[in-house]
Length: 428
Image (cartoon, rainbow, N blue to C red; front, side, top):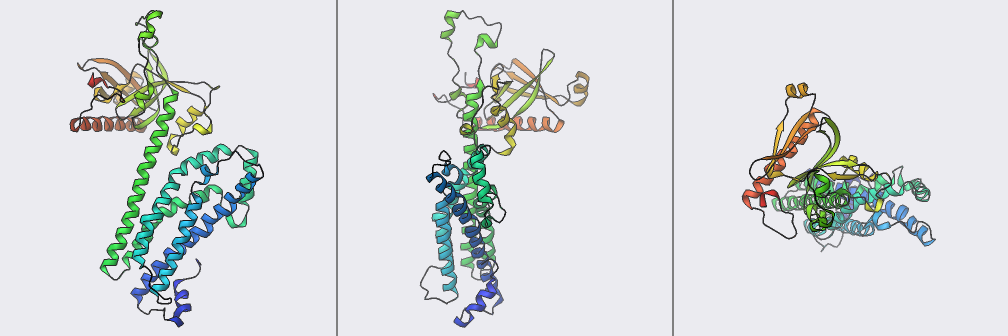
């Protein structure tokens, strides 16, 4: 159907009165036809291939006690629902086109009514559900790649001629690509509508889909942060005060009186804004550290490698590609021991080390973080070195942005004591 143009369709229906000689009407029909044919390609060449080639094969194998531990939902999510929604949309759209061309009995909804109802009630909601699972599906797929039985299943499916040399990963991304294309197709129709009311209606539907995409991006970011913080909670190590500070002496029989830090309260309600590896100057030595910039404080940690401990695929968080360094460290079983204490952003002072002083001291691409108490005394200082000048500028920019955002938020709505939130130094 993709090779079947609207002109050919109209020519075939001309005997039934469907052809129009008005070029403006033809342009509108052409835009609607593009929506229809692209939906056909999406449904037949992508969704149905995923369902009939990959999902159906996996289901049949599992009925024969093969790959029974593979979770089809984690790979394909609500694929069956996507197929039903797309098929119903295609049928209704074709019916509206035939009504518009007066080659059927008519009496059905208008194009505007159909699109408004379809995108509001089913298409956007269904695609959002799939897209929220997409990153998890890719991680799960990667975790299964090393298995010979699963690899054989994927290769056998990908050799099917219906795949047209596309791999499973290429097909899994199709619904995301389709969602982002809908606004373009809808605005293309809106530009060719002759009535102002229809134009405004089409633009409103396109904006509705845009809003759905923005809402999805927000949900994905929230879920990504939730998964990152959840995994970090297990990897962070908070040393007791007698181990952290050699000057602190606590008799063994009194240590139980010092309440341990509850990591869940410390980071569970925070947003992780930035993280990465830097070098810390400590007692004339350079040590590798890993920094975690949250929305209210900065954690400076030492990396401790423990290759015996590894995090399996079930614990892998939903993470974008830019976090591969942290992913790799966690996969190797690394833990992160917190140095000193969290540096509250409202008590943080940032100082740049210019190139002259950096060269003199032998600390290129460096900057200083000072932690002040409520009396403006500097209680700790950290000289940190980045891998390059651009990396240094990026870190300083992120920290400055986080500090500004927190101070602005505090000026509008001061933080109050809550049993579920960790008190910062400004609240003590």
